[in-house]
Length: 437
Length: 130
Image (cartoon, rainbow over all chains, first blue to last red; front, side, top):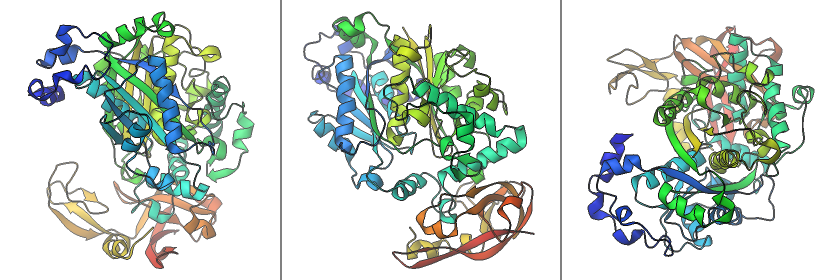
């Protein structure tokens, strides 16, 4: 963690405009030492990044709302939740507004429609991990001291195109020339992971279904979930076949949605929280670990088809930064784009033994009330999967849980949460660890 | 979406199964690469992959992309042609219920898809159980 900061800040005390802080929030008094905090790497390493506000739209088919309206709705919710009235910069996770909506350059569009004149805004793309990657960019910017208040959002509007159009857009997250070319779909790629996992480890069709059943049960308690109905193992196993052995109820849906968080330094967070009655009594949520990694984009290029190396690598980075082990995590939001994905992710995170991930949902270990609840929001499966927004929405859920605002789905005494967001079949992955202060 | 330029560019890989062997560590990559991820070497020698292999894993696609929908349901598998050298392709000319992991296959030259808009016929290999 020290290394990139050194590079980033080498001469930053010479180049950063000292008035940058004043433009963030004129009503806030900044202590003198904060105005001068660019000079040493030590200060930067010691800076703490807090998620002060969160917001999201409900997942669903928002035919009446545009891409920009969805984003602004989520961003305003986060801004209001945090109680900030100005932001220093923005990062926006979005996978494919070009293919879904024929609109690129959305960082500018979103800053414009959010009314944030002239703020720096950057779109971040890493397929379905775009939101997580954007969160990491915002984390790094606050950590660096470049800006004190950063908005990280994610948005995807997927239902303006036909299902075939959406399938095509999503397929561009695979290797177009050596995977999609031959007619494979994303359910097909994950189905091949599932088949290999079942063959090698004896994972059962029922164990796959248990993941979807659990996540729908959780989603039934989340007012922001796209699907709030409970389902049964039998319904999953007998739902329409998509790519054997995966059925439609093994797959996350096509979703319109947006999510946003406000990141700031702990010092600034305390001031805002003290002035905000709804936050004053709640713990601040700090990002204590961040990791990101890649793997081969093509599934067939991996030595072990069932192993998500990018997830394992990103998780190790995040655990190390946070000083945590898998057993220290109280709850997690993981990337269950397909039921098999949650199983393989839990193994890569070190939550389950290699090959034993199928037992986690089946035994109740990852259900609400279990040892480590996973996807209390309903996960991608039930909450919905607006691809670029998903990684940020995961953080929204963890913040609600760590603040004790999760209602019926509240995990008792939750102090440490983890988010895991991945692109494609695991070609990219971002992991964050968050703790209640 | 396949453009004529891409079609021509990919003939060595898709038609002839041309791969690259790292001159330093001897690892084989399909398709050929410019940098070896194992040893960082940048020199490769071309070779053609064998046209036989076995199925590592597979699926049956029942909901297909539009340019493949007339073929659905169809099987797709990851085929290992040499230890550690794999490619993804369709598994054809067989009973979809009889495909198994470990099954030996031959890779045969076939039409893969046609792009309606540009009229490009794209060819490659498909796996046929032996």
